Structure formats: C-alpha cells, structure tokens
Amino acid sequence: MDIKFTDNSKEVKSAMHDALIRALEKIGMTAEKYAKRLCPVDTGNLRNSITHRVDEGEPAAYIGSDTEYAAYVELGTGKYYPGGRPTPWAYQDAKGNWHWTAGNKAQPFLKPAAADHAAQYRQIIENELKNG
Image (cartoon, rainbow, N blue to C red; front, side):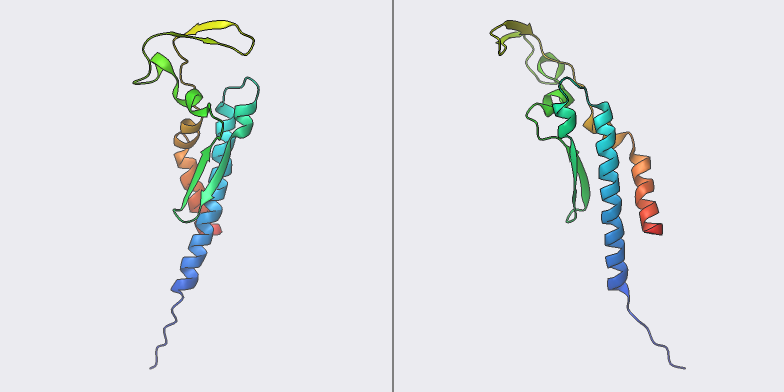
C-alpha cells in the first residue's frame, strides 16, 4: 500500500495569516468606533482625528490620534496626571485673557475602547479564522 503525503502547510499558514489580517482590520474599525463614541467633544477635531491601522508584521491593530493634545485628554494634566505638576499655573489664551489652572482630569477614550471590548475582539478573530 502506497501512502502519499501532500504538504499544504504553506497554504494553511497563508490562509491563517490572511484571516488574521482581516480580523485585525475589523477590530481596528470597531475599536475606532468605540473610541469616537467615548471621546469628549469641543470642536470635534479630536474625535475626527481618531483612526486605526493594522501592522501586518507584528501583527496588531492600533487606534490613536495624531493631534498634539490627544495624550493630555486621555491621561490628564497637572495634578491629575501621576507625577504631573502639583502646583497651579497661569496661561494666556488667544484673545489675551489670563486663566489659572491646576490641570485637567483624564478623559480616557482610547484605552477603554481597546480594553473594555477584549472579549468582542477575541470573538472577531475566532469568527474570521473559522469562517474567513
């Protein structure tokens, strides 16, 4: 009796990689949606700047914002940021008015968008690997 083995490992690995990348794209879009819902809005600039990207090399999905103040909103400033400035300070706004502040409390929108939905993201990966 002759037995012939066919090595399909390359095709299987390729199909799994493709399914994982599709899952990460879905996760990125979903996390971006959650972050935009949680983001505090003044002008809408911060919310509109939230995007996602998939890094196929890692592989991972990232959400974030390229605005210079996104980290301050997410993490807080001054006495509200661990290790931040403990004393109040003054600053002048664009109209020349002076203001005193001790900082701003954190208003997280990125971390909860990622961490609070881990089970859903896992399910997306499982579904894509099973059905993709």
